Image (cartoon, rainbow, N blue to C red; front, side, top):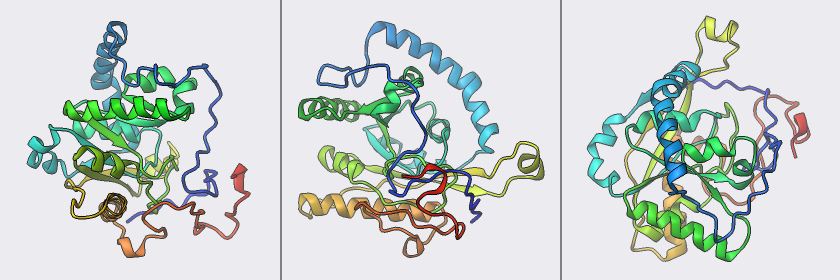
Length: 287
């Protein structure tokens, strides 16, 4: 497996923290009245144009920009009937465009993705919404109930929900960070399967490396659905499924789970440095 081993990005000390600044606050309140999936006529009209641009411009650009290869599509065909009844996918989060790569892999299937609330309130919020972004509310119990109800309805209707279980994006990072239990919680609550996917890296060509300064090319591998173990108690069921999802993503990324740097289930873990001896907590603005 190729590892870019870059120290270009300010990976935070906490494994679930974000480092890209959000430069705008549009003042949206994500409460129980917010449409976590907007079904209004105006929104759906814009969606049609966005979908057209995705297929004609954005998806081809994604293949070129990432040097994207997709493997394991046969698993989508093999389990089509199951996936068409609703599915949660999980993957590592390693590039601003990696969700577009997932959309390339599953087309013509549409999908939604859980998104950090400030990103929806930021300058790119409208675009994120129109490619399926659902904000994770931070404003109290009623907002959370409305958000969970929306997700349940989406999956009951046969929808596709992408969850970045690591909690944040770390560009070109190779180890698989600990997973939060959100995807497993949703899967256990709805009875839907979790489909693991993983991004790994390939060494770029001379032109990509020296002309376009690309650190790596991307391969997206698609695994097979995983289900919750109904014989376990609720919390144990979530932890067990989270561990199995993490192990599957490690395998798909070309990492032996027992050799991955991190524990599978998130518990306030700190970043493990292995790129350079200087790469410490204060590097490039890390918290």
